[in-house]
Length: 252
Image (cartoon, rainbow, N blue to C red; front, side, top):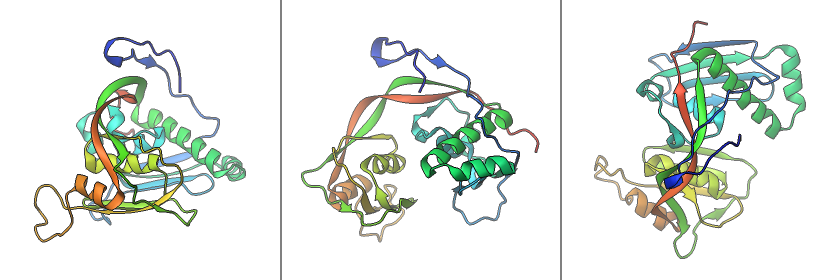
């Protein structure tokens, strides 16, 4: 991440203005369309080996979050439509770039593909951003006496989440904190001190009482009872991504 941060009062830094660099590898063609009204209801971001990339039923916020590897709650100043309008993307590189990506490790290839999507966001959505540090209302994730997390026995890293559940395999506690941010309503910062990878199964009842027959506890109590962890209100100085400009996508 670029430097040029300046410390000021209240742990707030001045913005570090920077252009999104163009990666050496780019998409040869990319089609962006509104998601059809009839869909499976799930959001997908697919980045298989090689030069293909696709999304279905994703918001621009979800796409920016993936491209910059930044939690949505740490992406600030965006217009409402980036959280509501859903898009499908089909993109691919030329043959030489596809071959180059296939020679990379998964980690390096995924990092390169994120940079490629950043460049696509600049080209098609006129995206301009900067990074800074702000002190945000957050939750600290801590161990509540004794952790109940189950050590993972698989090399997979998968997750599935909904309004009242979260399931995953191969979670680090950093990833767990990130996934808990959505139902918690604020950024969750990992302070468990737990290393390793874990399988997670968490179920809770919605706070609005829309599931009166559910025996599951509320979200915060479920985290304590089922995971042996606790969410504690806090203020945290966090890196954030500020959207300076964004437009509806340009024509295909």
